[in-house]
Image 1 (cartoon, one colour):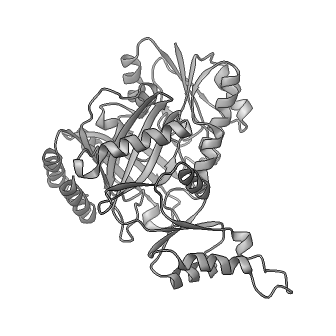
Image 2 (tube, rainbow, N blue to C red):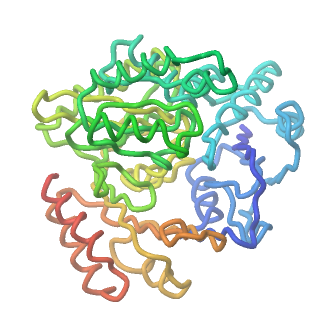
Image 3 (cartoon, rainbow, N blue to C red):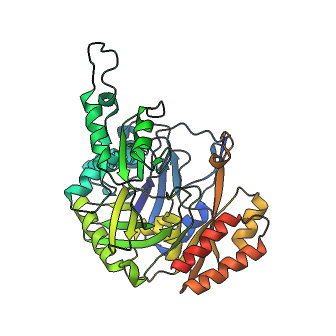
Length: 441
């Protein structure tokens, strides 16, 4: 059977400023996949940087796996990209949707491609365009979760054009919609988190501790788009992924996420540890919840869930859904001794996971990256560098996934050995977060 993994990108990619390094390489992961599934032949259709699929150097592919066909397409509309995939005569197509900034909307294009492939009789693992659109817009995600009866943060939606509707209308003395928004904001429990409804992850979020701060932000020049104002839910922040399709779902996780000084998970700074099966976190309750949401939404392929566990209520809240591969996908895969591609192809129903940690380092040289990967207990190393970034925190990061252990004690031992062997590159704040998280596990 011929399997084509595919993905699209709406943005220009500049390989002169964006650099990716991955150990094991995508080539090595494909070759391992081929040896695990000898009955299949594999191909790739994607656009640079082709996250999870390509080893990119500059604006070209550095390595290709033997026996795997590659099409790096420059086409832009769904029909033409689907034509490239169909030219390979696949039996199965699998979307490997990744993310980009400022808009996390690549899943919509991948879903439109999937519709065309299905019309041609190709079995395709990809979420529907309606589900992707619901998750692209955080306000629509809230409405979806409420409709399904899922606990989520109480929120107020702020429509930007209506919030400033009085502009250029000299005869309008009072903006009644703005007055309504402020009235709703007074009813929220503070602090609150203010998000762009279509922004990527936590980028651009604001935390307001009081109504006055929330009002001031909405009236400021920083507010240039639709916003959703959510109550901050106190508790432990987690992420989990669901792989599979209707009647064949596997829940991977949850993974405990570290938070920044504002109590928010930062993708470029977050330390992750899991899977967590401690009974005090009600893992079976979470598993049942995620299976119910996945079934109701028709998850097909993969979906990642941002979660909070409230220890006082002993209840789980769903904050966001990302119907794509995510920043925790490599950690999920390492817990099962697999790659994200193999999880997409064959969800892990019976294989018991091992405990791993995804730990952040600053940007490192190729020599140090290689040494880290060769270190005992290290399973995966990846680095993203943006030479065009103006702020240090935007320049990139290195993530090292280590462990594959049966207990938190063993994981802590791995962490201590890693810290003692690489003292010059371990950042104390990340190490402190990691130790505290292991204590929670």
